[in-house]
Length: 100
Image 1 (tube, helix red, strand yellow):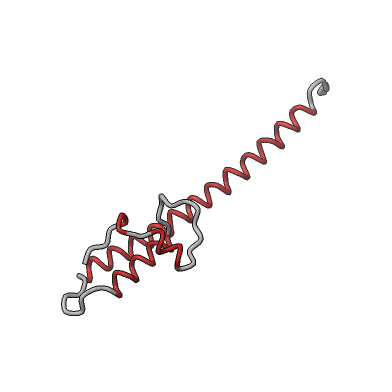
Image 2 (cartoon, rainbow, N blue to C red):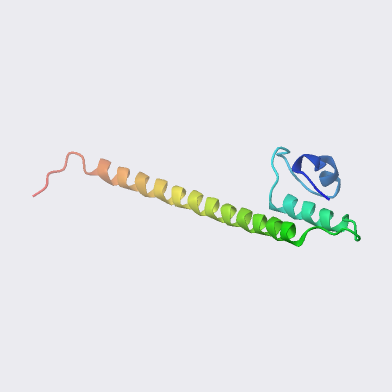
């Protein structure tokens, strides 16, 4: 059984208590919901290929790692911006002073 992202019913997700404002992207929770639905609705006489299941789980792991990397990059960017602002403030305070 093949489940595509375009087959995901956002309205049904909202009925299940999913609070979302951006209906254009799927996140980690959506991926897990799709995976569980796929497992729940598969034909017991013709189960999903185990290698396909492992591939989907590895995609989930990759997604989680990318989210972690993005969050770390955003935090680094925020800290760098703060540091640059503090350096600019210190440089401005030194204008007009003489050094010995």
